[in-house]
Image (cartoon, rainbow, N blue to C red; front, side):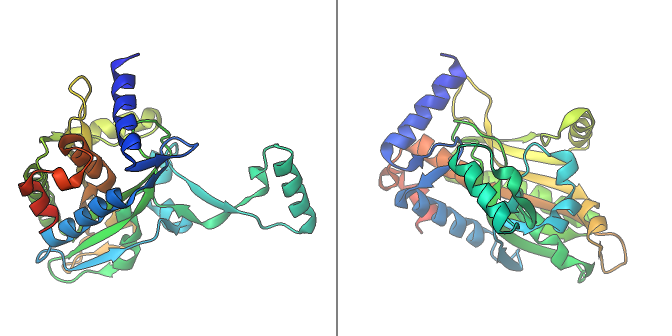
Length: 304
């Protein structure tokens, strides 16, 4: 048994045995217990409270977004292996009978479905940019955005779920404010996680772009320091895992969705994201599976 397998299975078994999560037949999908959800909810409240006074408004979006918006984000060209499309049946009675026959006989039936107008959400912030089209107010906009997200990465590792929650602080405005926002929240996010008793580090990173062209994008992203991650260790023998991150998008979303600053320039954007489920797992890993026994100073952050 390799070190990776040993850690993956040991931690997974501990969490499942404790009843915090319930596994199903597909890797990366779990039922969440009342205790697990209580910690996740407390973390969401903490993230909202931490942003109070700086983030002007908060939005919670569904786990799907319009296909047209998804196509505009650039996710299709950069991460085709991670995306999820929503399909449905649109045939007549004869085609329905064929569909049922295929399913009942154990044959592939998904080809009988057609794409709908929605895609599974891959990043919380993608949903908000269309609503910002036009001219921004002086100073730009600072928003909190949350949603369930999907990425097709089936794995037995609990830290790589297919369905997970993200909370993001998003700034859209001029370049200097975007960079300052990114730097400020990296510092504040790191400090907040340290205050929860987690041993974390801020590192330069890149997204998992697809294909040969993706390797060039990843190199450029690192060279320009556009992405940072806050990582923590679940196993000293393995690389640390990102539990929060920040991306500087430059003018990508501003240009795509027609967003301009009050001075008439194409808006730039950045986001700082909390990986809710990974942070919850890190808390259980570092402090134990019973939150009532966590250190008092950690509990005070989540149960003030």
